Length: 348
Image 1 (spheres, helix red, strand yellow):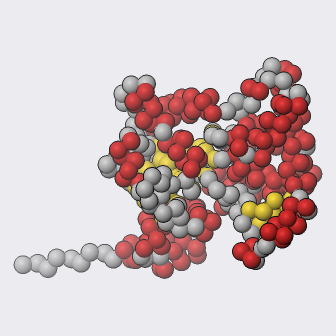
Image 2 (spheres, rainbow, N blue to C red; image 1 turned 135 degrees about the vertical axis):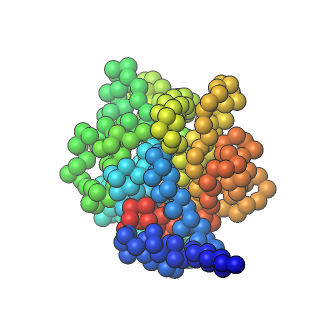
Image 3 (cartoon, rainbow, N blue to C red; image 1 turned 180 degrees about the horizontal axis):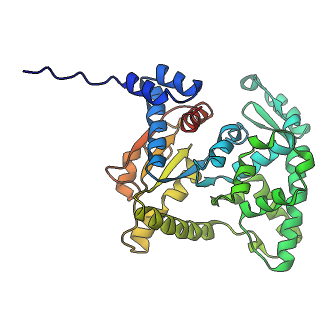
């Protein structure tokens, strides 16, 4: 009886896949073999396979990933058409642009765990708003952007026009008024890359971001007369429903599907993934496909009631994912994991 040929080892399969890629990918193939490291590589391979099959990818961004300078890797993903839509918090929307124009004024506080209440007060007195180990300068970043975007808010308000938050950001980037203030290489700004591609974007809960607070202030002061000049919330969901329906229909004819790559949790992830059960259950539409790939990077613990820490299979019960949908979860720091997954997809 002929002996059964041995199964190829995972590390050999990974080495073959990485052979034509760059040094980062080859490092991952050699070293990332177990636990969260293996999940990272599985997620990256799944992302790549999804695109190769003709699918599109929606990426969601929570936390403070823009201040973590995710743009260094995400911008290239956008330019190379590895990302087809982005859902992000208002903070991530604006903080990429804050970094673009005020990077040289940022301060890193590596000893942030040892700061006293008096130390924090001293940072406030200097108008340095801290995000973990990084301080964002209020005057050089936030107020500089406020002055420019306020012009657009007032202009739209007086003309009776309404735009989404990301559309106002695209307007100020395209207008060129900030260009002289750029302090990083523009290729490292994911918002600039998204603007150049006119990438579909959704920003749920924009109201709680710094610029959202500023907008509310200008409505209260009367600078902006119509509170609805900036479109938000429900209108974003109706727009997303239309985008998903049309994109899924085109892809279904070509065998592809729409994937969901989630960085962090919260509203950035929960808001968009709900569009599928809404189309099925609330609108009673048939023939709308489920998400075709799902991966989440999260450091949230799986516990009672935690959405961010929920394992992907829970989403099957809500009509968001199917039993056979490729599902991955990497329980680790997104600032470390996301650039590595992107490096694999980019062949770096």
